[in-house]
Length: 423
Image 1 (cartoon, rainbow, N blue to C red):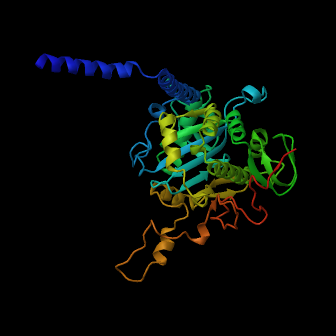
Image 2 (cartoon, rainbow, N blue to C red; image 1 turned 45 degrees about the vertical axis):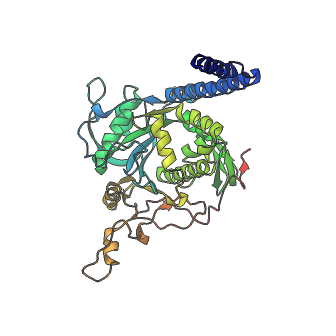
């Protein structure tokens, strides 16, 4: 009887194994198909990641910057939210590739923005530093151990040129960072350098960017030829608009900074409105274009860091993206750092809105001695308001001696929906 039971169990086991081995062939095909698709997606994602990471020129410059302000937070790598981030974004006008020009030598920074991302990721502040601002430039150390000469009363963009005198972008960035830290006392967590080609391809990857022009522009130097109105700019025209100077406004670099801020704000609004993080083909196309001409430090240069940071600010209100030009004073035809600058740098260090005014907060506080103004909740004072990237421009008073990129009724709302292609 026991032998019969054992035989019965063996037959049952054989039937169960047989039922698997004898699976309908169509299921084999289906499973193989699913595995094939998963393998293809994993391989494609891996190759895409390697390509995007390979696009970025990453160089560590900590060893050549030297003494620096104290770092008040952990390394700015999301998803470690809760730490403010200070990035220095530099636009390089190096003439190579499609923009080669034998008449222009060396490296210059065509635009520099100090980007502060609030610890709670609810606010982004951008302060443009005028390229013609007269400052002292410290001696900078290069990778081979040699140093550059310090400069007294030099134009700000000379820092990028001095650091890049041997043709190395990271050395140019390091010297600019050292100069900014010396000027402001702000620790710069990392940097990004974008050249002409990178800016142009980035805009093209977005499908263009809308921008309003209050009058016709015919600027042969910048190759910008455009009619008045709301125009959808491709990469070429967007770059030309960023570079255009003498054919618009008063021809000053300060006026050009205002227009550059309006253009960058339009690009940010366009990227946010396109929901790139939920559209993988569009996200890959944009990142592939955006990373091809980037030079960065090791933190922001990591794609995982880029992705984490982008994801953490994905829902930011465009009205909470503020642009300001560093406060300056005129001395004849030259400009120097203005008296309001120290307050702006302190606000960034303290992770407060750019327009926060401690004296105004104290004056508006309750007369009760037990109550004091809170830096985190104080309202900006009208005399220190800055320009935000709100799609509906509004009049904006400025800091002392006009330091914000004003938007007023001269610039009506311009969106992709009402923009016309430039012809």
